[in-house]
Amino acid sequence: MPDVTWEEPFCGEGNSCYRIGVDGEGNSYIAVAGAEAAYLTDSAESLRQLIRDIKAGKADHLLGGE
Image (cartoon, rainbow, N blue to C red; front, side, top):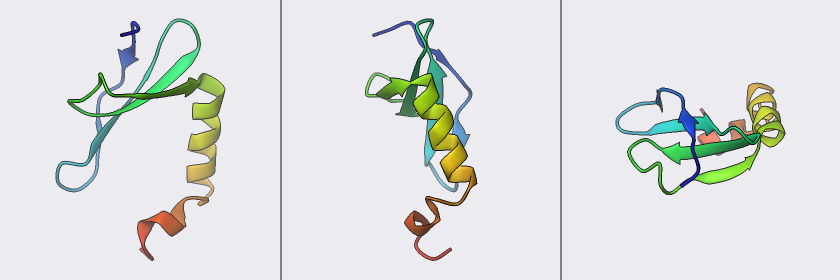
């Protein structure tokens, strides 16, 4: 596994906790808290764009009408 620096978990209701991390080579990682060995990875720029899009409401339809 790469040397990833993980942030503290971001938790919603119940046990839905995710962690975001970065490595020294400019890659970003997202994993379920407690299962960091099974991660999704992409560039740090892709993570920045994902966060921008979420903040802009582009994923609101995934919330099921909330």
